[in-house]
Each structure stands twice: as structure tokens, then as C-alpha cells.
Length: 548
Ligand code: 16G
Ligand code: MG
Image (cartoon, rainbow, N blue to C red; front, side):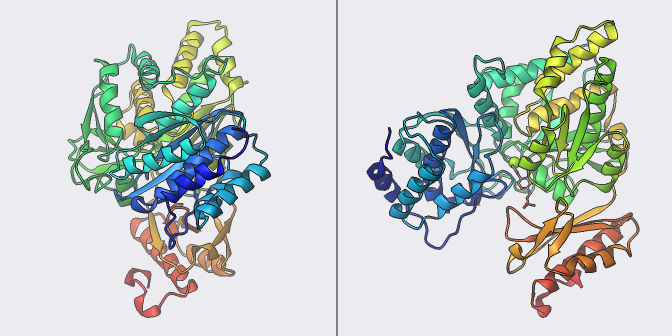
């Protein structure tokens, strides 16, 4: 294909008309909204993915159809760039423009414009791999996506029903196959083997950890966790709950990582014995939250910040034991949502950087370290090893047994981690391996530092775009004067911290607050929410009573 098949695209596009009353936006998590409104978007994403591949010299682009932790009727789609990372930001605007073209004619014109402005050579072949989660609207949306790919004569591979991190892994392995950067076999078996082998090696010689209860949010993580069982053998047992992927309405309903993090409590479907540890995945298995019951049966949450503290210190110890601490520096990336206690704990030990919310920001910042550890408090995260650090580790000639043991562990840590994106199951194995090495129970892990009580509140406003932030979302610059009022309130609370930012995934403004006690954190959050409500011109008679 050297010219755009305009008629073919237009004819197929007519079968996927854009709903006139919806404005789509490619946000932090791609397009995401009610699944039944997304047919035209998926068709157009098919065309866009083909163009992106051509632009990148025929590299394989990934397309994931999922709405993560959102309710079951929602769905979404995002593109994955060749190394398994999020779509480059400049293309987010192209995605939004194509999705909003009001008619097939306008769509074809927008495609033509994109080809010209980004200088795409249409004679280059297009390659795409796609997958979906378990949502009921998935099959129909994938059919629309295929129609878009076929309109562009793209070569495509259907990775079936799988998790977001597996799709990212496939993109990377397909694109690096047979090169010095090869990341593994480009199949689901390759993924399962690589991670489980590394995990088993890390556990060798350690006491077998107790079985881990995994809450699968009734989503696609249940399928993958089930497949892992055969690969884990006797080394480690996992018990799956909320694995009902075929029960209508069950997905993310009163279960999963988001439920646990937001409500700071156990899903009602789970009871823990004193001392028992468990974890919850989200609907597409790229987020994980751990928790345990203490000896009195009391619930304690171990979120992304706690995972960072555990994992980063383990890697630092291994690097030191390997004798590489002069050459390999470990850094941590957080967002404003990181608990203040975690930031304090980590800053005393390592370089810590704060970036805006959203995986792409964390991931890119992590690439600037030899080893970059990033987890959002909500449980999305991974560890990146720079090519130079990996080279040093693999070529290191150890002078002592202790050094060579540490090097072996580091190699296995690298392989148990999915470096392309946050991966709940790979993270679960990483955490369990570190706990086994340190002989930690949940209590010991939890006691690395004590979380400050915190509260998240959302406020519905007329226009969330009126809220603009700076300093990695920690300060509002607009509406003018609001930050000064927030500062004034925060000063009155011991250990108080609060910030306000527009959500990137919902039409709301989010308020976060923390303070030394639970009642103070709650009060601060609601009072800041009250300020936001007033500022946004909310009707005084409908102001939520907690905000007063
Ligand atoms: C998306 C982001 C996640 C972020 C969340 C914030 C990706 C893949 N996911 O789910 O990292 O924490 O948005 O949502 O980037 P919010 O903007 O609605 O608070
Ligand atoms: Mg997710």
C-alpha cells in the first residue's frame, strides 16, 4: 500500500458510526467509557495502530481492550509502543482527533492529514498484536478493531483473552526477537516460564512461604493466575478467590485492588485467619494491593508504597552484596499520593522523585536511574533495570561466594519482574520472594514505617479543566487563590498535607489529605473538598453535609 485506501476505510467506517453526542478523549489510561459507545473508537484505533506501526518502521504495536478496575459495563482501549511502554504522548492527541471526527468523510480526511503531518511512509507494512480482558463488550469491540486493521491491510495477531501486562510483554518480546535485547519467548508460555522459573530459583533453599490467597477481582487475572499454578509446581501455592469470570456483574464488584485501596478494608467475600496474608488484583491484573490480618484478626493494608519500601531496600542490599554499589544507583519514583511516611522513610535512604499521576510519568522517570523502582500507592508499579546495569550484572566476575550469590539473586530478580509495565502477578511473586529472603511476615514488612491516616474524596464540578496544577500536582495554580486557602487549612492540622487535582479518568476533581490521626485526616479532606465545591460554583443547598 503506497496510497491510503480511502474508499475501503470510508466504507468500513460507515459500519462503525460515531455516536453524535459523545466526545472521546485519549487520557492517562487510553479511551475509557461505557463499552457500548466505543464501537467507532475501536475501529478508528485499528486504523491508528496500523499508522503508528508504519511510522515506526513496521514495528509491532499493541492494542489492549480493557477498562481495568472500572465497573463491568465500561470498556476501553489503549495502544502500546514497541518496547512495551505506553503510547508516546504526542500521539494521544492524534488518537483523540481521529476518535472525534464526526463522520466517515471527516475521519478519512483526519487520517490523511495525520499521514501527511507525521510523514508516514504508507509502503511500510503494519503489524499489530491485540488482546482483551473478560468484559462482555470485549468480543464486539475486538471485531470493530479488526475491521480497522483490515481496512489498513495490517498484519495482526490475536493474543486472545489475557492480562494487560501479558500484552505489554508480548509487544516487547515480538519486537526484540532474535536481537541482543531479546526479552523472552513471544508467547504466553514464554511469559509464564520466564517468571515462574526465576521465582522458583529465588525461593530455592528458603522456607516454603505459606499459601497466598489471591483476590482476582473476578477478572482476567484469574485466568493467568490459574495458568501459573502448573508452572509453580510444589514451590508455592496460590489459592484464588473472586475468580468468577463468567458471572455477569461480578467484575470488580466489591472486590479487587481498587476496592481494597479506596475503602481500606477487606472485600466482604474474604475472611483472613490471624496472621494470614493475601492480595487483590484489579480487573486487568496490572495493579496489586497486599494485606494481612494481625494476631487479633485486625486488617492491615500493604499498598504500593509499602511494596516500594520492601523491594527497593532488598535490591539495594543485593547490589551492595554483589560489590556493585559504586556503579549501580537505585532510585525511587512516587506520586503525590504516596503516603508521607513512605516518602520520609525512603528519602532517608535513597533518591526519591515525585512525578504527576499516571504510569507513563513514573515509567519515564524510572528510566533515568540504573535501577528505578516505581509503584503508585494504588498498587501499579514495577522495577526498571537500565541496559547498562543489566550488562554489569550479567558480566560481573565475582571474587567471593557472597558476591556470586548476590549476582545470581539479582539476575533472578530481573527475570521475575515484568519490566514493560506494572504486573500484579509478577509483583506478587517478587514480593513473596523478598519476604522469603528476609524471613518477614506481614507484620514485619508493615513495620518498616507506619502509614499516616489518609482520605481520598472526589468532588463533582462543572469543569474539571478549570483546575490546573504544578509541582507534580502538589500545588494548584488555578483557580487563582484556592491553593492559599488550602494551605491555610492544612496549617491547622498536625502532620497535615493535602492536594487537589483533576482526575484523568473521571469527570471529577480529587482531594487527598493526610494527618496524624484518622479523624483529622477525614476532616481535612472534607474541608478541602468544601473549598473546591464552593470554588467550582456548587449549589450551596446541595453541598454534601460532610463538606461543611
Ligand atoms: C490511570 C493510570 C494510573 C493512575 C490513574 C489515576 C495508567 C496505565 N493508569 O488508571 O496510573 O493512577 O489513572 O486516575 O496510566 P485518576 O486520574 O482518575 O485519579
Ligand atoms: Mg488496571
